[in-house]
Image (cartoon, rainbow, N blue to C red):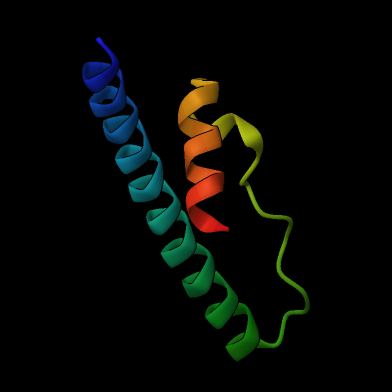
Amino acid sequence: TKLKKTEVDCEVLKKCVERLNEENIRLKKELHELRSSKLGPAPPSSFYPHHMPKNATALTMCLVGIV
């Protein structure tokens, strides 16, 4: 019931955080490489809302937890 939904939402958010952390590491590495080679600004990030969970409740919980 409600507790089970909360557990599922928590798992969705954990996976979302893992993907975001991996993306953050990748982007930091890319930025470092670009700065060291002085090739100019980094290309646009591949992060778009499609990386976020489709579960609106989980997303809302994530945003509330940040604020």
